[in-house]
Image (cartoon, rainbow, N blue to C red; front, side, top):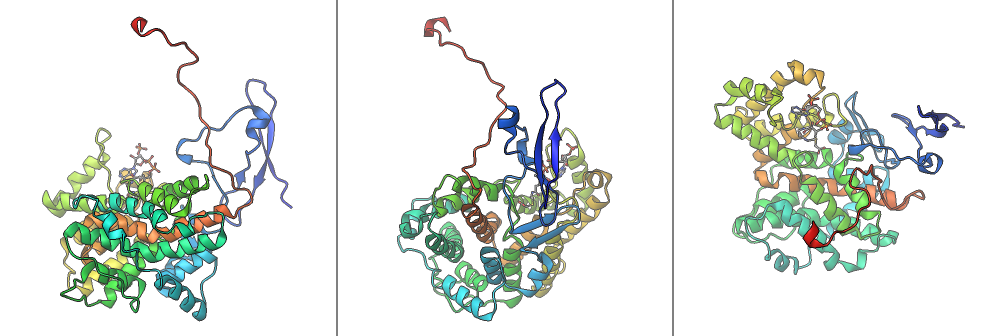
Length: 434
Ligand code: CMC
């Protein structure tokens, strides 16, 4: 039995208050402060959730100091090598890896839903051709609630499951449509005999007049990108999905909120920003200018950051970055691009940064986005689509977390409190006296 407590005392003589300490299966304990306000009349103040667990979860565990990432207990390295993305989806959604029959059944259910309502393409026509794919995707995912109103009841487990399958199945179709629209090519319908990743690549790169020959190394690389991005516990977009869904809104609307949050350069937009950064350094002289660039990053008066470096939770090498670097080697080798100047530049940057005092002291290491852009570029994915690929992969994580929240007996609508610093009560003066 756990009967550990933490006692909070005050320097102003207010009575102290005691709270339960809750253990997890692994990782830091948490102090259960739900009764703090009723016991003390005070709130906690924690902008950015630096020390706050907003929920309990059994899905993903990160040990940031060790650089460890587990999905349902399985190390990411193990999953990346031994499973495909749909197996990982099954694991995240239902808690266990599928056996052969379960895998066939799950893949069959996903495959049946890869097409989108034909009206979607007319909806798409409302967007400017040069719209950012993330702007388009936010709209398309939100619009799914209008196209699939038979699976929008968040409180119905069956409808939740159908919407989960629909989202996982249709995201590749929607992302590929957003791409085709931006380049003015006809949409390619899904081909369900292909694997999840191969189907996506064909929808992206085939045209009605020329089929796309799937390269197995590239398919494996993309599948690995999907696995590595599938979930990452309570990050900004996942917390957004949870908060949004906590009001009881429909799953498509909640996932659209996640897509919108992911877009930011401090989160999913970092892969695009990291590659653009490499292009910029390349344009200014490449490896020879790395020292100068690092000096700008370290300058207190500059806002330049080394994109693809640093993480709120990892204070060690992001395990996904190691796997991504390995994939990067494989892909460049398979395409005969071992001398790729951007990859060389990235390795030079990494080498200098991980040995530099500034980065060492702040525990800044490469994160997943440092190498994923180079891999995606080699596959032929345009830079502006990188974050949409991240969204495609993260959709399953968002859904798993949303389902976990809805079925948690302790779940409540998310409603943070505040430390108010504005004006106290005052009266409106007549306009002439203001
Ligand atoms: N380059 C240079 N300095 C950095 C960087 C960086 N990439 N990241 C953090 N720092 C410095 C920062 O200036 C601060 O220094 P000081 O203490 O002297 O003021 C210190 O390190 C702590 O930074 P912070 O911004 O307080 O840390 P955070 O935990 O709030 O931010 C982060 C985490 C990921 C937003 C940040 O590291 C960052 O902006 N990295 C670049 C963007 C990026 O690659 N994001 C992808 C994250 S992984 C994909 C995902 O999960 O979405």
